Amino acid sequence: MKQHGSSVPPEFEGKIDGGFLKKAQDYEIEKSGLDIIASLFGSVIFIVFIFGGLLNVYNSWIASLNLSFLVSGWLFFMLLSYGQEILSLPFSLYNTFKIENKYGFNTMTLKLWISDLFKSLLISTVLTSLLLFPAFWLIQASPNYWWFWVWCLVLAYGIFIMYISPYIIEPLFNKFAPVDDESLRQRIVTLTEKVGIHASKILKIDASKRSRHTNAYFTGIGRTKRIILYDTLLQEMNHDEILSVLAHEIGHWKKMHLLKIMAVAEVFSFVGLYLAFKLTQGDILLNLFRISTDTIFAKFIILAFVFGIIAFPLEPLVNFFIRRHEREADRASYDLAGDGASMVNALIKLSKENLANLYPHPLYVFLHYSHPPILERIRYIREFNRGKTV
Image 1: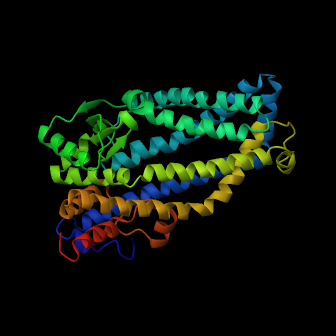
Image 2: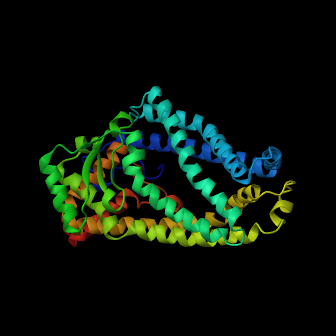
Image 3: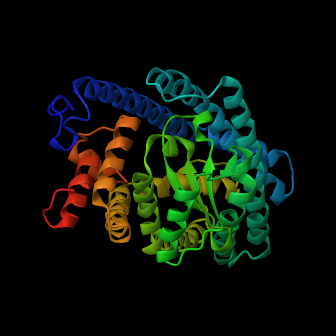
């Protein structure tokens, strides 16, 4: 940003000025700084917990309660989940009421923030319990094949969440209403019908009560599919631009990106659970980390640490394929809507409204970005017209 951040790129000439670039840079620096601090803090806490003897103390305390295997496992992981949530609260508060407030994005009140927090904790407790109790029952009931049955459980659980989320979970946080612009609604229906998507509802969400950021997305699967438009998106963009954003999301659906990601995730989950089964059979993990009480719960925590290290180098590879999915969705969007100009205008507006970093470092993009940089996307879209200006 120091090298390039003061110059307005040609794609944004006449649409932004130096003041915007300075504000976007400041926003990026503050966000990144907080993310780095939060990440380091979380890593240090986890390392101290693993290597500082706290895991051994915590594991022994859970074992000393003499609870059943199912209840012990549930309590072990739920308390850790609550602890993680408590440790993240200061960073969430600072981000919402300091950074997001400073740059004009936050519209959430403290009362709403607290309400969301307790709702999230309640929902997390219920949903996590629905996964933990059956998982530990399978481990107890099938000591030699639990890894396979737990894999089946996790797969079924993920599909279950996708079905219930649009009707049970999401309405607990936001209000959904039909898009009242009949012209826009008809154009959306026509667009989705082109690719055989029959969304049960086309709705707008009151996202503006929490933030001024904009978005649109699909939710649900099968007959529960819904098209959701942020009210902020409806306010800031014209119909053509909204359709181009929506066409991008349809592009993901058409190219079956979600299905592909799920398939890859399930393969890794299958392998990971089998390795977890093999590694928890002996005492090597307990001896390496000096755990005095033999429980599979402590072994799982150690494996989470080890697998995290192993998976870290894979992040750039995963992001590479996700960025490719984004380019495919942009191409599919153009093929579907045939309107490169509106796609470009929508991206420019999204960049302005979200204070996007126009000059991310290529190495940082390679390591961490799940989307191509905005300038790269705009130039890619403009190539669709074979050199014609859009």
